[in-house]
Length: 367
Image (cartoon, rainbow, N blue to C red):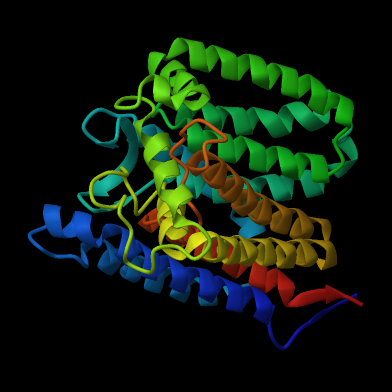
């Protein structure tokens, strides 16, 4: 038996608002100089757009919070189909927008969407439905793993054609977490892991720029003005920040040294301005958010709700871990943003919508 709570998880709401507030402040701090230089002195260029998408995302979050999560189960197949069509549309010459060497956007100018972000959420919903309906087959390869993974790797293939290895990696890792949680056998994961490593090796070898990223990750000082530039500048931001940082707005690396300080490397600016203590508090907020998400997944009234919560929490956790690993030099540069903090309309809006789904699940509990 289940009952509806009068209120959703208030701690999750509070943590989300705190992360969003920190994100808006840091987007302005990290981008003001760059915006003033590139957009006729408008230092608020990036933060105004981030604030717009934050507003849209919050409205969507509170709307979704009051929509029973089983509704998304009914639209799971249609949602995945639409996202597939959008991923294909991105690859059509003249339709997709190219940024930083990746054709991943649809739209006009600054107001555009990234279909791969929508695919992550749509695939989580679809996979939660499929796994909950076919959980008895999950220990088998033919009826369990192959049907589950075929759609995942088809999505990954379309995303790689853009190419966008970072988003593709988050999608695959999130889905694997869901499949493992549903009861897949460890020996099958070992087999899949070997296949995955082989595939990653082929992808790296097939593209010279990926080889360059790997070599720059292992020794960024080998090419300090080329492939190792981003990692070096990121470390030069994090290291000097020390315990307390230089102070809010006092970053040095945002003065045209660190590329994209408001997006992929915003954590570097946080560490430089707010120091070890500030960076630790931000990571603490993420840990609290993930903990609340796990609690919601455990107490969900049905397997579908539990797997849906696991997928959302897994997606956030994977993105946080990859982004932090990249900016601290523990992984090659992948182009993954930091949830709620990095500049980016599609990512921020979809993250807030996902939190709305989690909040709705939190309104139901076992008795």
